[in-house]
Image (tube, rainbow, N blue to C red; front, side):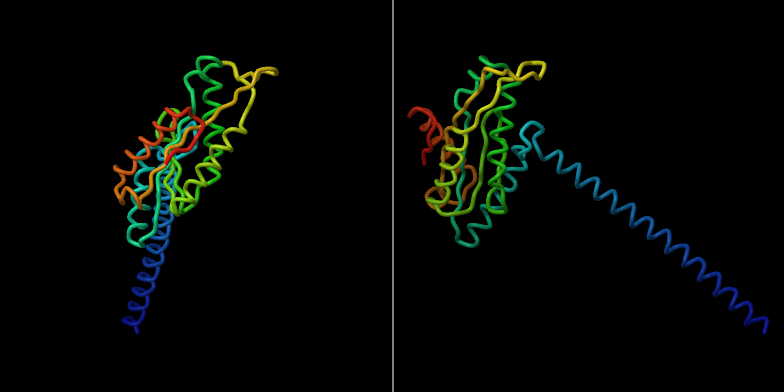
Length: 213
């Protein structure tokens, strides 16, 4: 009888210990999940440009190369658009950097409308933006033209260094766009970027506010 009581007491102790350990493990799992959530949020913040809200250059190209490999594997076309705000230095010199920042924000909001699993948008640097997009050449050129026309319609009050908006002076802007296609250039990220950059240069040489493939 005593042995039975000892056994039951031992089993009760083991059950109590297991219950305690289960609680500790559950707490650790919850803490681990919270840490992972915080890390993912921090990673997301680090990948996004503060001013534009778009992907920074490095994470953009990571996604671009993944999209490029997927399109090559599926034998689908994709392309690269390089976009430049025309005469951006003049905007800064004439209206000041706060207005220049506002122009970048508005252009970024325009581009962000087209983000999707098949369309990756990033800030390439300064007043330049990059878009990697899956689709036919006609679809990619159509997207570029939509963006160019959308920028033509943008305008807003000039903002001073204190953040005050002018009631009488407005800014306007246009875009030049260079396009490169994987069908023509091959599924090589560097080559496509170089081709899009050359096309962008031609768009500027031909008078700006246009799309060149």
